[in-house]
Length: 127
Image (tube, rainbow, N blue to C red; front, side):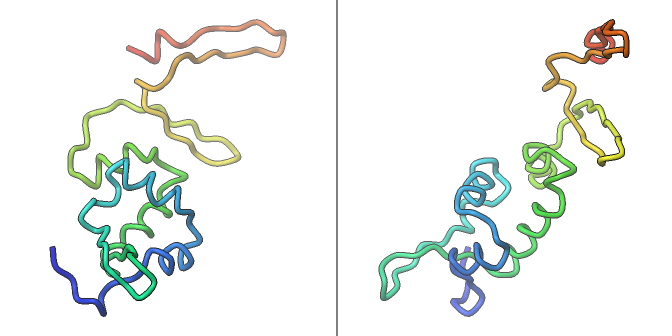
């Protein structure tokens, strides 16, 4: 994939623009949210730096940031790659917001009543 220098942004400027950490960027890369070929190494006067195609990376980072509270990064990576599996999910909606969990990631679900009695719903959910 070839990109003109004027259509590239340095890693440093990208991290500053979106207030994201180096670690987050590389975690997204490991999870497949950002393709390997978008990490373009170029020699500069200060040594070798990493650049990204502006339009592609801006769109992707904005997609990740706008969805990271509502969907697991692994699920988002599957959607982006077009390899989304038919994974059952449970959605818990509270006064604090909504959270989605993949059923296969849930280890247990218990209801704890006011009197301390507990009821295990794990088996029902795993059906």
